Length: 240
Image (cartoon, rainbow, N blue to C red; front, side, top):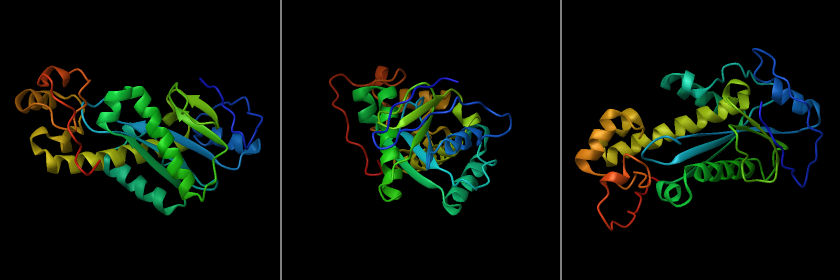
């Protein structure tokens, strides 16, 4: 476990010394609820590694009494399984927010900062969807805290330790895959519907053949080599 906490100015909780119970991916949330939290949210992102498209983050607050066991790391699920769980989250009363940072923002502030910005936006949408009510604690996948003043616990491989983070990972992945499927309709020559912008051999070959499109991240290796000199940043299509 790796974690630091930032204080929510509205709520101050005595954070528990978190322990993980094998096979119980709601144990972390349960410990926070036992120490007075009213809402515990999970934060995760999808799309840090691709050469094209946005980075998408999601914030998820699972109902305390929901069946959390189906929610696992999105990378361990098939696309149909992720879609099914995405629908389940819409049906079981989960509070959800989605945020993203587009390729021009990624180029301007780097992929890590863009990922954190997307998380901040996802939290803001989740709060808006909950009538302005903030979560008391954020469980954040990875090493880096979100740039918000709420108590946080960062968890390495958080999708395997927290069902809330796993749910957020599913939402982020499904949302991004759908965006890249839409992108394929605009730019079918790149095969975004197959690799979602990740640096596969086929994607690299398509960039070499056709050059980058407006969805490509122009500061990434594998793209920057094929940019025309003095080429201004292109406008993004309306789907972003």
